[in-house]
Image (cartoon, rainbow over all chains, first blue to last red; front, side):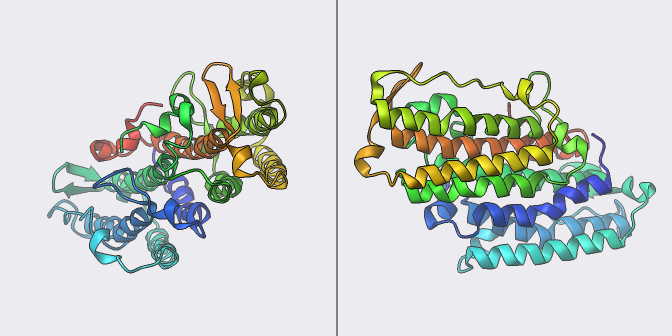
Length: 176
Length: 176
């Protein structure tokens, strides 16, 4: 499947509601459980997604559109949520994520990107040359990867509870 | 996390809305894409979940409650959806799943299961002795595993589109 702005937006626009449906109102062990030391809870994953809305996707797209590959992107801090959102409730995190995502998609749509613009190149500090369409496809996959991660982290809270059925449930033995 | 009926119900009750939020209205490549030969699309996964509502969870729970381990469960047909739902739209599948799940959770709540009943044993045709609470925990994990699978299958449609970012997106290289 080639990247298309319309198809990408279908997924990006749904993610806040998906997270809300999966998580809002769950009791605390579901939202604060992890996969072990140095792994994230569903609540921390929502914080990580907020940080991405603020510092990663749209800021990088803007660099590509205005400066192309003349300077590399800023590095993205993958664990900022551990410091920034310690006293935030899940409800507040979900609200903030929805609000930021809506604003960012409005910005993205407002650019009315042409195929030529989608093919523009930027420079990733480690990966090297990347295109705007690759950045936007990555935004989509990043969302879906974290939705999958949230479901997996929740599932793992019942690893012992399923008893012998572990053998039939690969989600319980997947690495983080 | 030990199994509890209340916590398990929190997840089981959300799954129909989670699937609807993730999938309803998506364009066709997102809902019909797979991970390769012999793997399922998001639409087929919803069919599989319907078949489970009809033939697996509540029927097996009923066997445990009425016959304990005097006879093994029927084997669950893991690929029935490939034959049964070929001409169903995604919307019809989502509606049917919601309806069956609501009915099954009403049945489950109506039983007002005691801790003694949750500890009752049944007999799985391959796994041997299992308890009612293990069956119900497996229902929860089965839901979450398929939510994770749907997100992963969707993500993989953009494997080529992300270009060099594949290296940072483990969801794209996880086996099915």
